[in-house]
Length: 333
Image 1: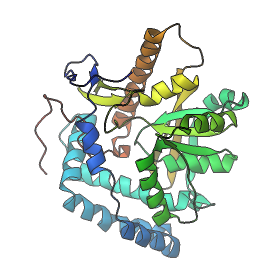
Image 2: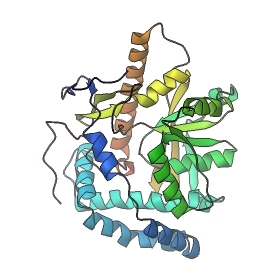
Image 3: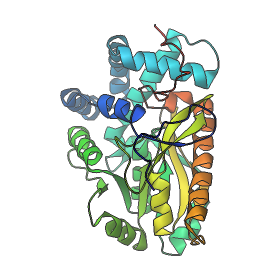
Image 4: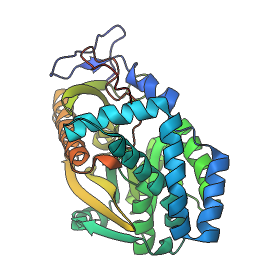
């Protein structure tokens, strides 16, 4: 189902369909335009000097981007004020930038065979046992929270196939970044928007593969198969697309929430949470809508709780609450 042209998103607590603009434009216009030269330099330092030296280099890099990235710095402060529920300091914002830089550096190691001896511990991974044992693969929905590469590395260690499901432009950006960070690595992507994408994803899951989607960014415009909803998030309504959940409903798959949380040092925690089960076909379209909506509400609640627990792992450095009339004035640091 798609939102109708001219629909006005509600600013109240009740979710309504939106026009898919606003915050969608915000992230597409300010999405990660990583400096490929800088990434290649970091790769050289990481692999030549080792992780200990590379970690020291992160401090001036994180400080530079914090000082020069006015928009990212402002939005980091706005997010942290919501997640921490207190006034934000320079130290808070710097730690946020440094945590992001640390996970980017660790991509180099996670995409190597040995992972540089990073510690990947798991919480409730047994949730994955049933779908994998049944040969149905696993459909995971996450957020820009922590490191997806940690899941890929864990899958490699366990002999599992892991793919990322994303739209074609995102897939191109991800592949360009990977080419700069780890040229030998090949991240399997399933690009949505193509005619055969659904069949490719179905076959991947049927063959026992793991497919991951990130559902915390809306699309540039609504499609015929998804709509954008306003849902309460950290005190104010924010936009979320129901596309990933409608995809799971169409494929009749159980869905697990997964995130690779960075705890500092060498430690990552891969946390798995049962999210929804779309294996049973609802009686009608209204039931599908209710099922999808319930899954979205649970998803947003999980992400919100994790943001409060580990706010430095949130890597959306843009105005996540764009177009919200009650949005507070920008925080100036």
